[in-house]
Length: 174
Image: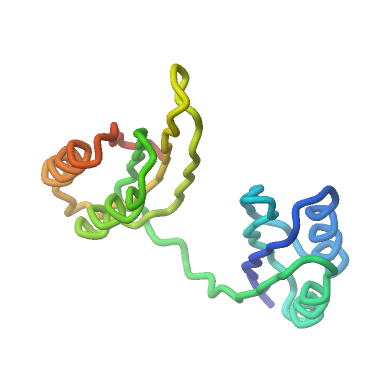
């Protein structure tokens, strides 16, 4: 029987030992920790974890995760589909003065061109020569073979001018 894949979202007050607590709970039910992304955000620990576990231990693992002290854990079961062929993979980089709406405006362009965001990492940091905050974003996106890359590039250049940010689009090799 095939393992069940669970996606955990976790949030709690940030302090040492939280990752160990989650990992120990997963391991105690013979769960396999597959992928994760975790961060310290505004004093909170926030994470997303993909684990696989045998179907007969899934319910017990969910119950154990739900009662971890000082952590709020949400669990979703994922239906694992056969690996589909990847389309064109692109990398998007954005750097510019921080302002409200950058992620919204960029994601609107990506959606208009039917790009699927597979990974997105953002952060703000002080500019090297001033105290101004700079917004940084790195995204991996997937496009169909039908993508009109020239039209996408035009839309991104127009957006770059409007937002006064640098936007770079590169192809990723698999």
